[in-house]
Image (cartoon, rainbow, N blue to C red; front, side):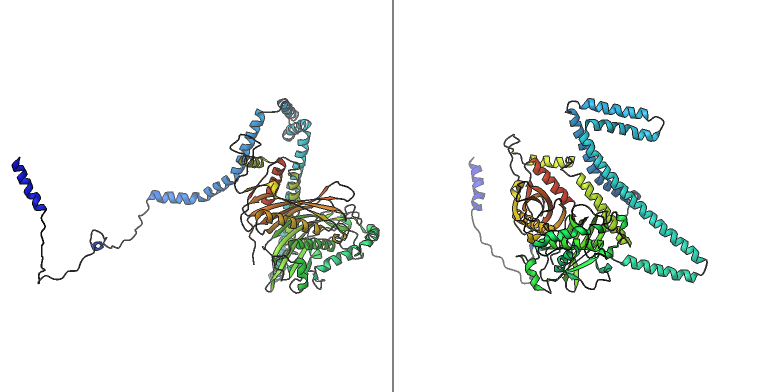
Length: 639
């Protein structure tokens, strides 16, 4: 043991000693610089030149690539068809599920009625033996007759909607056949002319062909009637100012500027009944250029007019523009129906509908001139569609800022019954397209009215939308349908209302001594703008105005009740509905006169609006329908 300790103590004691070592450099050794760590080969990668070389494709890869390029059009077509059919299939599946649930909980007496309806179809099939056409007509006819006995109200609605759709399809088919027939006649005439001329000299053929080609080009190069300056009436020597429009209308109808003489003026108009046509065939046809009119609003050249149109934000009051558009639309219709032999017009033309107003600019400058132009684009028996456009001077040219479509109706001299108007003859392909668009607009309005939520129940998709909104407002803490809470960034629809009251004074009367329709639109718009501003918390800009129906005239001295409400929102868009009611001073009965629909765009994103009751849910769906009819998103110019 002692030896082991002795041998281990020696090396341990030597490890505790310290030594100092001196090293002297050699004189003949060269001086070497120190090497950094990152310069060592261990930490650096030698630079090398690399080049990407694509591997050659194998025959299999080439075949797959060719197959992909070959199938690409078909796959894109399949994707497009899938995206189009997916909503329909979803709605079909939803309809099937709804039908299954309905059959599971069918009301009493439903299956016996269904059996009777099916038996009626079998009877129709038995009676239709021997004829294929009868087999297609009799069974559904007998089943429809049996169903109408059990469900008369639904049958009436179905017949109305089906009739309107059949009318729309027939109208479209008539337009297509008419176009094909006209093109066939033109082609036949041109081929006949070429054959006849070829019997003489080829020089004469080339000369006539070039003349016809130039005249055709001139006709094609004429812009849309009334939308530009391409179809001005050469008889017009100057452009009238907007303040002259009302004076010209008073002159046309013989209205008095003094309220005390309005009864006498209306008695004088009764004598014009003899000038009314008994049918439309007795009236001479007119062209679009006959009604083309241009009106100037000289805000830039006449600064004294700005006070009437100026807003606090140094922009133009859009409500005043609505008044001017209404007056111009009536004047254009009087230009279409004017009688040269009569000093006054026997017609009483009033605004029936503001179909659409689309804005192209965010705000209008009050320091630049504005020009209005318009013309009659479609004519029925007693109604006329008017296309109008508004321009504002920018530099040295007028730039379009607004497009409007109004529908006017003609009534007799006492404004008690309808009156016929002159037919309209299109002269160019552009005018034919405008007239065809007017027919389609009429069919669209009829179809939209037939699907109104006041007449028909919401669709399956709309019902699902309302139900999902209802589920989002249920309180998760309580299992109750009565406990409702708002989701984040949302507002109850009932909290977005504003109301106003107007006394209708004689100052706001029109040429027929009723309240001016432009005045009603201005008041409704200003209330709707205030509602959108209060709801969104920032300055709103009007984007579109549509479907303003004038249901009842407003008499002078009435009380006008306006109620505005936000009924739909999306991103920074606000859909506002303004309801107008009138009550006389003698009677407390309220009657609806107008319903206005305005689409505003806010400077920032706005909260969602949620309905609480079933009636508010219908208002929400109606607002969504009007918003969906607009082209969104709308890009408004700021300059």
